[in-house]
Structures are given as C-alpha cells and as structure tokens.
Amino acid sequence: MTSDPSSPNTTDLDAFLSAAHVDAEVFELRPDYRALLIAVAGIDPDRNDQTEATEALVAVAEQSAKQALAASAVEDVPHVAAWREAYREFGAKPQRTRNSLEALMRRAEVGMPRVNRLTDIYNAISVIHQIPLGGEDLSLYDGAPHLKRAKGDEPFDTVADGETVFENPEVGEVVWCDDAGVTCRRWNWRQGRRTALNDQTTSALFILDALGPLSDEALTTAANQLVSHLEQLGTDVRTARRLMSPVV
Image 1 (cartoon, helix red, strand yellow):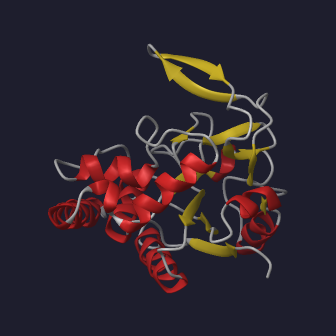
Image 2 (cartoon, rainbow, N blue to C red; image 1 turned 90 degrees about the horizontal axis):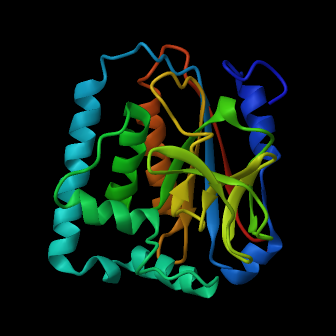
C-alpha cells in the first residue's frame, strides 16, 4: 500500500487489488479456477456489539455442515472433491493436507473453532457457501498478493512446539505470496503467521477460491454475505473487490 496501511481509502484498496496477480501456470493447471479478492478497511477493533450476530452466523454454518454431511461424505461434497483433485494435480496428498473447506466442514459438524471475530465470520461464510476462504491483515502485507507455483525457496512462517519456525513450500506447490514470502501454502491449506488476522486488525484481505462446481453467481453470493457482515464492524467500513479468472 502506498498510503497509511492502517486506514487505506477506497482508492488505495482498488490499487492494491489491481496489483494482485495469478500466474498463467496456475490457470493452466486449473482452467476453471477463479479468485475473488475482497479488500476492506475501516474496521473498528473496539466494536463489540456484533458478537451475537457472529455467533448466530457460526451456528448457521454448523447446522449447514451437519445437513451437508448427512447427505454425503465430506469428500463427496462437489467443491471439496474438486479441490481434492486440484491438490493431487500439483502433487499434494489431500488425505494428509486437506483444503481449508474440507478441514472446516469436518470440524463444523461437531463445533466450529473460535479464533477471533474476523476469522470466525469468514470461516462461517466458507462453510455455509462451501468455498475455501482465507483472510489476512492487509496492513501486514508487503506488496500485492500473488498466486504462483513455488520455486521451493520461498519462506513461510508457521509454528512448531509453540515457537515460530520457517519452512519452504515444495517445488511446484501452488502458493499465495507477497513480496516477503508465502502467505498461504497449498493454495488454501495453511496460512502463515506473519499476516494473520487478530483482534486489532483494521484492514483485511479476503480470498475466495472457486473451481468448476461453484458458479460465478454462487461465488458472488458468498462475497456479498461476507461484505454484509464486515460492514457491521465499523461506521466507516470501505470495501473493494476483484474477480480474477483466465483470459479467454
């Protein structure tokens, strides 16, 4: 961001999103892939009157997961199955490293995790609309988001035994990055610590990952519900969005 990242205006948000990039190699791997990026600013970290609304949204997500999994196994949910296939295509084992949608749906059936209000909101939207969805602190980004196939030397910060450690993605792995390193490994498997949302976050980036089974209309519906909840978190919340898809 070129201005104060703690309170970017709408122009800044649009500029940030316009610099985002998805490599052609990713679209070659999955021509049906689309990424919907939403940047938001003006979140009030002291706004705590939406706790009940967030809990209600999470409860809807938990019930949605129960209903979906009563009808089929989680691996047979169409969008989960598509992401399992995509993981195999770049060499990951979906049984060992599950896409974020599958991991959440497995947990949601017995109770969604509670992390912080922003994470709880986007996790709930992810399950309700059956779409992998990630969120990160925009002020902690170094440059614009970039989805690519890894060279294998990019740094990724995570936690082991309670301590921050650095690791590298596998060569060819699909990763989201900024100029400082990997922000999310295996497309939508595990996010890094450096850009994680927290209770003091005032600006954020959300990424909705879609494959063929999810229509553009369904993708937009999920985004609209996410934005609707975000707009309740401050009196001056501003958002911008960008859909990234293959050029045809």
